[in-house]
Image (tube, rainbow, N blue to C red; front, side, top):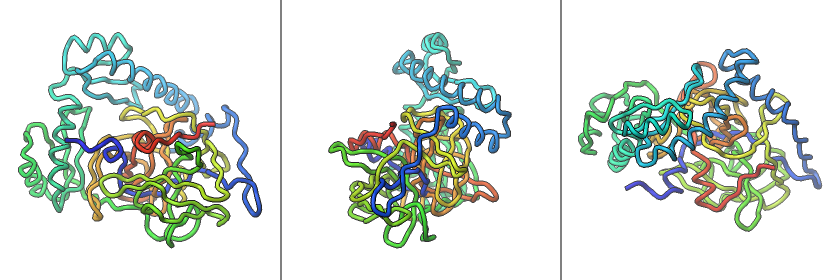
Length: 382
């Protein structure tokens, strides 16, 4: 049985992404940054994709437009497929959205909605059932993570030790034909190391702000990674003039938190791109697997990559975190909690990963929408 939405969608690794929730004007407070025009925002995102994906200006614009259209089609196709919906993924090279179905008739309905259809044996729900069974074991030493691979219609177990992966399969009593073992040298870790300085601090450590949000009572605040602080932990803005407290936090199991502003911490709908500009946030529509995303964090700034998997359970030394999303965007300690965004749509908060921004690496984020829904939060979009 899958955990409740808040737990299953809130993840537990921690990279602090720096979103520009500036301190509200006041005694010793920084002024709020001016909101960029729509053209400025588009240029900021396009330039990042040109740099990290090796695209021309036209190619970057075409990718963003195709992704936005794919997100809309994906929702329509999923509704058309109904119970036969088997997951979907987007190809950043062909700019094509593929929707898996478990019934040939449903394939016709999906294609009528504008997506390419692929008939598969298992489908996303069946794969999630396998993931649930693996989650129930608590993991094995030598196993890094496991996730539903929608494109290949299988569950992938990533492990340093093949025997440990086989032991996990046997312990979970899952169908071996539905599972693929992938050898990896990665050893994921959390990115909330004590590195000192900027973004926001808590108890001597540093993390990054994810996205500005307000609670059901209208209190300002922001979402970040759960491993950055437990409920009741104090948080301080980069310049020391703003303060807040962790009102909600979950980790491990998931990795998300809500910090409520207590003094001089005003909200904006901006994410810091660390190039003198900002990216506006207009919503939180989930991007399909394969989509290009960019992340912002107080250690490494603004970096981009692609969504490689969703619903991945990651075995950190501190415990297993479920329902994370894996990307090939790089990050480093101090980036925990920071923003992941696709176009102008918020995706999630940085959790942890492997590698760095010199040699490259893997970074996981916790999806934002389950946290918003579970805690009754409203994403700031204006």
